[in-house]
Image (cartoon, rainbow, N blue to C red; front, side, top):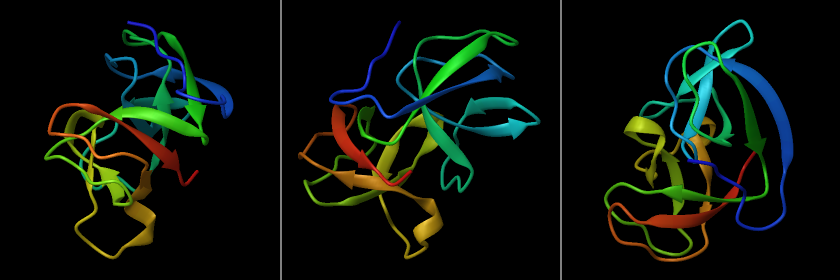
Length: 120
C-alpha cells in the first residue's frame, strides 16, 4: 500500500524500518536511524509512513502538513489527537502536549481515516 499526504506534502525524510510497517500509519523512532510503528501515547513519533515496509527497508516518512490517518474510537472535528495503538490516532485523553499529533479537521467514526493537521 502506498500513501501520499492528503494536501500539501510536508517534509519527507528517509529512515530504515526496524520492523514491518503499514503505509499511512504513524511511525516513531526505534533506534539510531530507524523507525517502527508508533504505539499508544508515543512522544517520539516522527510522521506518517509513505508505504508498507519490511524490516531493514528504507522508508520515506512524511512530516508536517495535513495527513490522512486511521483513528481509533471516533474523533470529532477540532479534537486534539494523539498516538493510539498500531500507528493510529485517538482523541487526546491527557494534557501532555508532547503526545499530541495534531488537530482533527473532520469528524470520523471508529476505524475511518481522518485528516489531521500535524503538530510536527
